[in-house]
Length: 89
Image (cartoon, rainbow, N blue to C red; front, side):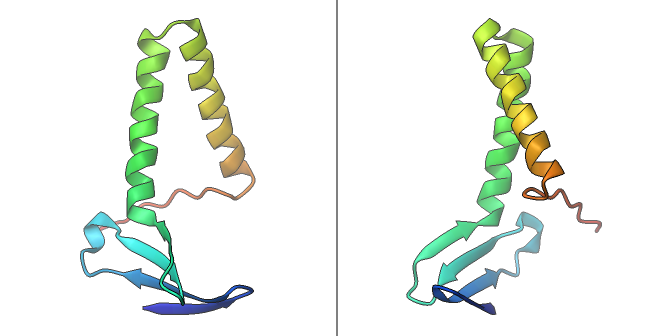
């Protein structure tokens, strides 16, 4: 467990031994669940799959939404709000 001090109090991060699934959660000291990194990665992968389908098969409005999503991810990467890392095992 990793504990960090923040404005709202302590924040605890838990990294489980099942590292292959990248299960990391973050909680406040009062036990309030904040974030699950493994779940977020799965959701991002599913969104990218859906985006590819929309670009291939979607109507023009779906294609436009897919392009906007890709542009949004590009902006997050450029601004440092999203990072891509590879695990080498």
